[in-house]
Image 1 (cartoon, helix red, strand yellow):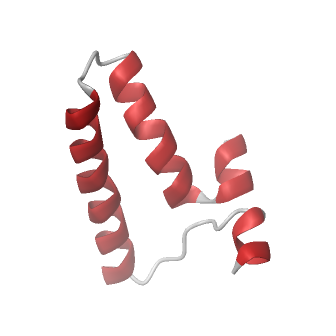
Image 2: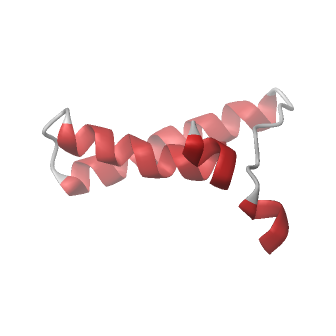
Length: 64
């Protein structure tokens, strides 16, 4: 939740998902990277298709 608050939903998911897969799922880093790429792509696609707005966090608006 702190990562979502700070950096936003999609970047937080891109950090949390592979870390969880590697630590809890005992998945190789390459496999975790490919699964993360698929998950981020899917979530971004479905969010775009449904015209949803995900939390951007506090840092992203300051940088862009």
